[in-house]
Image (tube, rainbow, N blue to C red):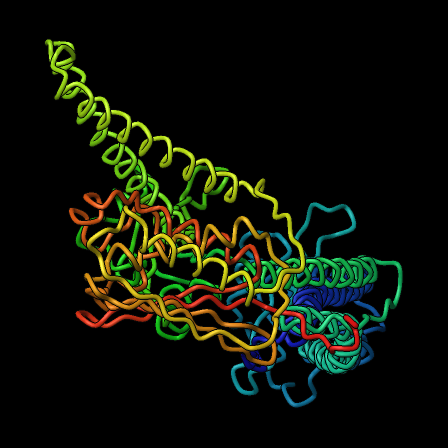
Length: 618
């Protein structure tokens, strides 16, 4: 925000004020010294002139006083000569001029209005002091009536031999004219000073503007730079300090513009990275308040930017009851938190890192959220898989161990028990071998090493062949006493599909075996086919006990059984449907099931097929 500068705060006003004050101060010193010197010189000159006059008058009056004191008879009257002489000396600023004899009697007076004082004793105290001391007296006195200043000289007169005191000369002259002259000079000086001050104000203002104009331009430019506008360029008026400063500001503007552009580029790059990261990123200040959150973090936590900015990180992650900010800063350990998703609950791993300066001051925290739902699921499945394999292998191994121990204890000598024990041991061994083969098959599929040997096969004929085999099986001695029935609703035309015949027969065998295992005595197993524009769908339906709805999505998982005890009793390993799913998906198809408890189950296989015209095969 731009702050308004008052008039008296302006640097222009300050420069003008300083220049004028310096000039006034200089004029004060110069004027005081000049007036003092003029006054001293004029007064001294005036006093010297009067002293010269009185010295001349003394030498002129001396013969007349000697003649007067000696009472010599002469044609010339000394008193008249003295008065004539005083009359000639009057004027030129002399206001009073008297000659007094040695008896303090006034012999002559230049003032025609005071001729009555002639022959009278002088009443002037200064004359009396000089008469007593015999020394010259020069003092400045003030006229009592007019108040004007006068210069008074009382000069003793001695004989030519210098031994005899003849009288006194008193001279008063108007020195006020000198002071009036000094006052006139002072007025002239003050007028000249006032003119000089006015001119200096104008000149100082011009100089100040010349100095402050570049400064104001620099102020405007620096404010524009602070506001992010780097387009302006200062005019360089010269090569002085201000010119160099303007040049440096122009360089600074260019450098700041480049730096800002680089920062903006880095910020855009960082924003792009944060936006497109598959991990969520949250940054906080030193107090744990969120300042940055990327789109992925918003999605993972199901929040918006406005909802979390300024909020406490631990509160947003919903871990404030289990974790404190201090503990987080000290340990920086990863934690697992529950995320939210429109599809399903997620598990997030939150990793923390400190934002530190070179001094070690912690200025914030960065939290990276990684979706580990799949990893956690895989880890859980792995643990479940290991548990299932261990359990599935332990059961036949335990059974085998029991029978082998019985044989070792002597049952091998019993002709009735020994063959039966050996048969059970052999069956359990075959069961483990089948399980291991299935596991190896799944492992090859997971590793991408299970390759299909595809060929163009008539799927209608293949399904009919499988159903025929099981039709013969249910009428064999193995199913004596069972009354199963197989129905078929096949297509009347061949449907050619690219598939691996052995693998697909394995899938159909698994489904048919399950249908036989879980169908009740007298149940019907129905095989159907139907055709769409791009795929052929096979369905196999039994009339068994059915599968609960909650278990339908899990039956294709490895080692999963709806009824574990019954499935194990029937010899199942829990891998058949898992292998079937992998094989069908390898063919680009899909397998699923539909079931109702107590009514039966239907398994569906959807496989892509290649339509053909009759004349292509003619």
